[in-house]
Length: 273
Image (tube, rainbow, N blue to C red; front, side, top):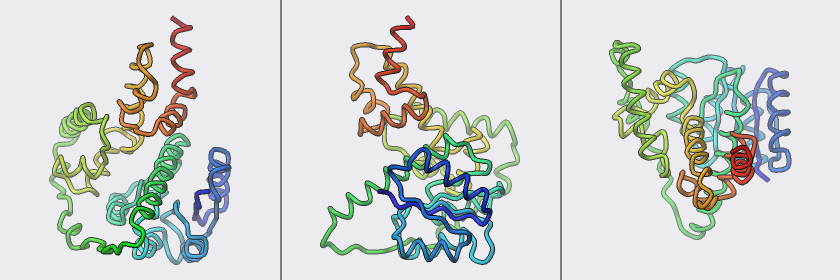
C-alpha cells in the first residue's frame, strides 16, 4: 500500500481530505494525519511516507519548511501542497522544492485525484528504479539553490496583460497538441518556452485556470475519445497513442475523467449511434 500523509492544522479540512482520499483510494493507501509541521515530520520519518499532502499555512513549522526538510534527505517523496492563498511566492517555493503540484483550496476533487494517481505512478517508478539501482552508489546532488534564484521572473513580463496571456496560452496549447503523446512535463515545457519554472507554474494557471497535470490529462482523454470512435483501433494502442504506456493506468485515468472505462465508453458510443 502507498503510505500517504496529510498535514493540516484545520481539523475539519483535514477530516474532509481524509474522507475524500479514503473514499477513492482507501484500499490502496495507508493514510496518516498530522495537525502541524512538526508532527508531519515525525510521522514522515516513522512511517516512511511516500506521498505527503501538506497545507502551507500551519503554526510552528509550516508546510514549506516541512517539505524542505523532507527534501533534504528524500528526493523521491511526492509532495503536494494545499493552500488557500494564491501567492506567487508559494508557487515559486513549491517548484524549488520539486513539489509534484500546488493546489488551491477549495480544491476540486477530480483534480486532487488526478494528482494523487500521478503521485502513485511516480512512486511505483521510484521503487522500480531503486530495485534496478540496488547495490550501486548514487550521487545525491540536490542542485544549487543559486541557480533557481538567478531565474527570478521579471515584473515587466506581465505588462502586456491579457493580450500577452492569450499569445502564451496559444503557444502552450500548440506544444501540447504536438507533444501530448510523449512523456512531457511542466518543467520540460517551461524550459522549452524559456521561462523559469516558478514563473511558468503561475503563468499556466493564469492561462487555463487549472494546473498542468489536469490540463494534459483532460486533453489526452479527449483525444482518446476520438480514437475510441474507430472500432478497429485496439484500446491498448489508444492508451499508448495518447501518452500512456501502461494500459491499466490509462483505463484508470480515463474512468476518472469520464466515469466509464474506455471499453464502456466505446460501447456507449456505438449503442448511441
